[in-house]
Length: 201
Image (cartoon, rainbow, N blue to C red; front, side):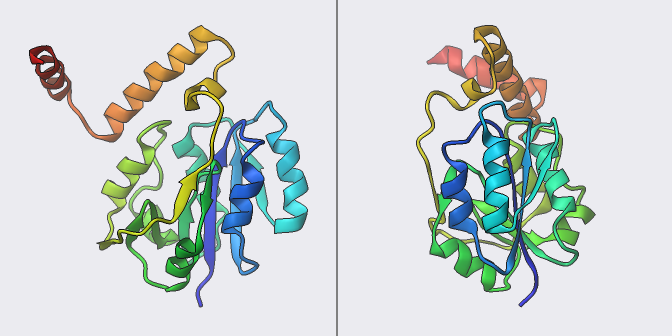
């Protein structure tokens, strides 16, 4: 079996990371986690979990896309890779598909060789829509209609974890919509069309 690397980014998710990491753990996988300088004890929790789960943990002030690209660098050469969210719990289907050695599969995450991602430009510096943009650009051969994960309950909206006050949360939301627009490759004309369509209803 080829090397398998599971990688992801995290920020202020101290309440969910242990369940998430436990769900993707396999002693034969490399698990790489990039922390975006969390302030809620996430980094300290990762230091504890590193001993039990043999994690590669890194810190980088970054968007989700840039953080995933940084994590990918630490995956073994020629490994089969899958990104994961550290506020989700993964089930046995995730592991069965990863170990099947079939790549180019979209199952929410994208299971693909590290070198294929690098050849196609890696992850883009986006904080929202980065996974959609990534799947479209890197490409895949199959989409399997299986459930591999479930979101854990996170208090408040996702972006609220990143903001220190209401202004910073609003700024994050604005950036999220801008990044989503960039990820889906919308032009200004496309957006104006959407806006006009909304006015009709």
